[in-house]
Length: 189
Image (cartoon, rainbow, N blue to C red; front, top):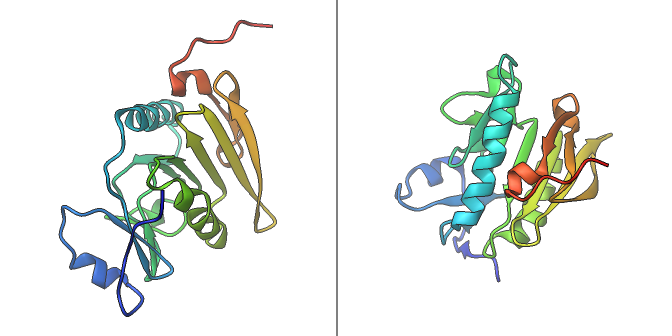
């Protein structure tokens, strides 16, 4: 499916975005506006919610905070997005919106946004030094892990629904993917 872009004769800024109707959801990457409709599917929301819940539970007592969409992440005046799930460990970045790069971003693919998530957003997150970027394919039940090493994303490292995801950005925290996808736990080997 093609990317839905709003056409303007100039690069869009944060101030432009603030004047748009509240009932529309847009992301802006390098001054180009991308439509975030249609809304996510129920499967998308279950997976994002499960990932959020697992992280929230595992981060109790930790200074890192987990958030779920919709919440604006503003990298600069021309780049602001609403990741599905994100973790921020620097409380100075947490305002009414997130100001600066989160430590971890999780995107659950939707047919209308998958190309943008895997291309434009990946490049954006690398540019602004997000430590770890996780892309989840809800239909294929596949997870792609991208880790920032020496300023560049390495990966993607591919995992299936019965594996454990080790998050490099959160001290090797482990996320059992069968809990994210709601599939049967694999038998111990």
